[in-house]
Image (cartoon, rainbow, N blue to C red; front, side, top):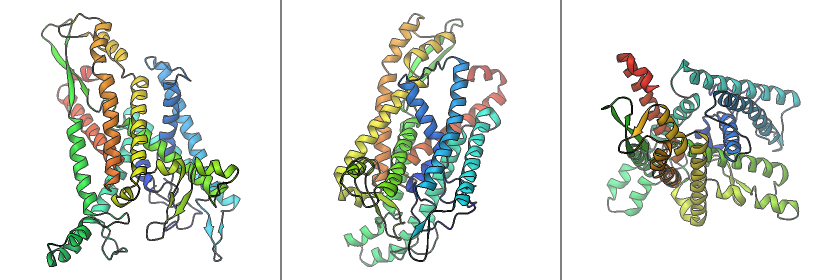
Length: 454
């Protein structure tokens, strides 16, 4: 579907993309059937998690009926979000056609209907594919698989993309451009300008600084994923059977960064729609003052830069990541505010997910008691185990959320391939698939362990 263009939509090359660089996270492709990607699914989950975490809806996740109802509501809301985002794309002018006079005209009512119908059908197919994997027809989650595939494609393409030379006379791929620049360095090895031109290209193009940052972020995340606190536990009924209950440094995995990226992506997307429809001149009088202050104003990039609408003021300006070192140095205040907001969002969603996902101390202690386990050296009591877990779970939740936010934002500042958020998600997803395959292999060799591993 990512290679099949939407029927009735003209070629979108050089046309403004409402999602832009966020497509790596949403696993979508401009002008194709996966125009919306997993955006509706993630947004629907985000809305329900926030409603549940704020107690606006009461959900008992220990009750199978409540869990099934919550999952069904998430699927239904995903369909509605697909309809809403498809309408927003059409009404917002994402498929407008520019005539010879330079005037953008929207598609006809008939074309708009067929475009919306295709987006809804493709969105339902994506929801069903995700559901199929979750129902044990495959491994892991469909959302995770789509994200990892998109990020890996972006990283490989930015590293060795052999397409036609771009504005600086070099090819897109960072490694190819690096070898093209080597003669300049060899001619004047002591020149700082020569080395700078080799390591940093600017203009949002892939370069060696981004390549080195990508490798460094991968290694850092892999190392931090291995950090954990192990609480010694044992079975109360079977003496001598001991084990360890691990509490990872990234206790909530990559959930906070997914929700934070979805939140920022929707602010960017909705801000564009409001700007294009109600405040295209970016006036600051009357009602437009609030539209300028909250959604923000946007400026059009040149065709060489991608033709994107980039926020220049308002809330969207401070929730859109500066994705190169030159942009960060040009406005360090914006970079600092963006990182602060992104980190706070990650912490908020980490804390919320711990409560909503049944990973808090009270729920975990109950699960350990129900499974017949106890913490060594302490009496078998839910209150006692909860007090022990309270020493670690709240701390690693907050510290892990802060660390995830800092790594993701910092990687974006240095131009990491696939974005910092994308790398975080991909490492976690690949590790998740590795653990699933190892578990499957163990249960094949030792069928008796299937009940123990779940």
